[in-house]
Amino acid sequence: MPRLDIARQRLIDQGLVKPALKTAREVVAMLGAVQSQDYAGAKWGIAQRMRGLNDAEIDKEIDDGAIIRTHILRPTWHFVADTDVGWMLALSAPRVHAANAYWYRWLEVDDAVARRSRTVLTKALREGEHLTRAELGQALTRAKIDVAEPVRLACIVMRAELDGLICSGARRGKQFTYTLLERRVTKSAMLERDAALSELARRYFTTRGPATIDDFAWWSGLTKADARRGAEAAASHLRQESIDGKSYWSPEVALPARTSGHLTHLLPNYDEYIVGLKDRSAYGARLQSAGAKPRTSALSGHSLVVNGQIVGGWTRTLVGRSVVVQPRPLTRLSDAERRAVGVAARKFGRFLGLPARIRWR
Image (cartoon, rainbow, N blue to C red; front, top):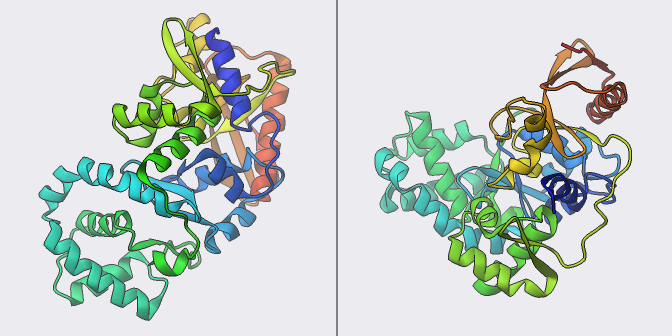
């Protein structure tokens, strides 16, 4: 399978070609988890995989607790469906704690401090229910736990998230809050470890495939041994094939990779289409063939994607009561592709509830 076909297949498997899901929670559950340290960007990424939901409607699902935003899989925020947070935390939290070990030592957030902090946070949230990080910091300070450095407060709060004590609460205006996980989530499933490995692998490879064990290990934070164990346990839902001498896993029944027209997406940074893979070389084939340097890092900003290939970046600026979208192509686009970019920009405007204007560099 050529790299172009790998990219197109992932585009289809992720629901970016013919979105069919109706709620943001369904999208998050389908993908397993969605990286969300860029909160606004992650919501736009979800919206492109569903039919017609706007920014405010996704906010409501998050505020109502259908989607939880917490530290899970790797040391960063992810959206995860409320029914999945229990088993996914149990599976991934020990690995994230291990990855954070140096940070815990540096900031002197040892087990004793974590235990004291959990007691304080539990009391504060039982009284206040939904509190901002600053308000949690005030409660810790009153209990003589030093959080003068914001990074130490962030570390203590993250440990409490990974321990399954707290998670995202309803936003207060534009401020994020935390609440007790036990109050927020009442129906989260728990799975035995092997079943959890299998379920995570199934969701990963059916939405990111064709992908390798290395890709899955990177995304999940699991060891390569556990990543392989999960894939093999989910093998009845998957198929394995060799591409350029590498072993790839995909959904058992692959949707046709043929697409028509110029499928154009304004993907946000950290979008799962890109950040979900360790090897992103399949997305740079067009730029490479045009002699441009591919920018396939998830850290290189928002990505302008045509037919599954990254062809540049884009920015957005709120100007009055409108949004200005500025494409930044790194290779020449045809007139039809430029028109398709305009269609994608107007879709972004509808998502925000604002008229969109496009400004070519």
